[in-house]
Image (cartoon, one colour):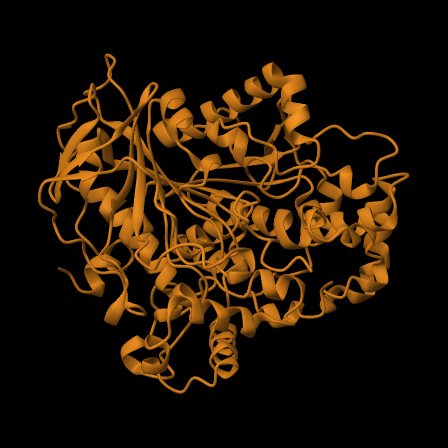
Length: 549
């Protein structure tokens, strides 16, 4: 099985009331003017309103690792919204990354701790621009909303911060059962707990607005960026009320908006979890240890196949934080004051083959998640995809169709919706480890899900991909150049909203193709995109995908 590894990071295996904390979406004061930085760049020290912070000098950057953005969601607060941080005495030693939030026992012996609501901040050191407020980039990691941590080495923001002269922030948030289980049916005091992971992220962005000035950042110029599950959470925020009060720009990587859960599904998934443990009260959950909760989570997901398992947890349309379907909300102008950049990889579903090689041999007859509304066109669409891929086996053709259904085409729909309001930018990441003749298909994978992340962060660790380490060793200068180009575009977009290529419109569909020789193409694979025009991409209900293995 390849459960819990399909949507998310390859690299992670092994006060105030609620209104204040989610104020960015429910109505909050505008950010204060950028505070004068109190940073000692030589010794990586700074002061925020909560107390003094000691960071770590790492080359050209100061790293502040493990700075709390909310109170520990422990004890009586386990399933409640995040609460404000209590100021500390003395100096906070922010010199080591935190372990992240609790994660499924199937990936290790109880990885993480419930006291996990922390940020990592990377700040360029010194230089002539040290006193000029810098653009801020806040990263939300992926991992199927069950795995991952801000402290993953691939997400180290030092290279990105130095390259783009920006403040880079990475956040942890509650995962799995602890962050995404709706308990309002058990006790109305816990209504909305199914989006607590999203509330954590909103609390982190609120913390950034309040405190990033002391790190040299501009609280009025914040870009949120995320991949996979992290990107889907950003989609949910874009569909909220006034997301521009949290951030001015968003970069959505491999996470189209329709993957936000329907409200019915969120309730159904919660009922499934509670039934698995015969849970009839929140008090029963509160009495369980972290390890017992993780075991309950694993038990609930046993036998849940394919994408239904990989997307078991996540943000949902709850009528408040997320008032309605993402693309519909965006089309109606919910994010009219936010600039958007979004994209996918060329071969998203090849990622699955890292865990289950048989997915590359999926015949058309086994493509059970193909939309019923298009059933009479299934063979015709397959033939069109096959004609564009002469010589490829059927499984590869089917996987190209699944990539378009799950990622590329709905991503373009979201870009179209936002382009009505603001210039919107689209990319496609095409680079992959070079194919080698004679190797099994699972060793010759394309530009899969997550592959762009080492390039975005400038940390060219491709050890998790077949032959990745050898490829980097053999071609580091060219791959470094590609990474540099991508970091320039990501940080340029964060600085001024222009990544370096034309904006996307339904009439032109300009798309940046990332490869060792980057280019801009108008409407790449347009014939295949148009084949999905009759499909409305409804709110995501994973039950519709339960037959997909």
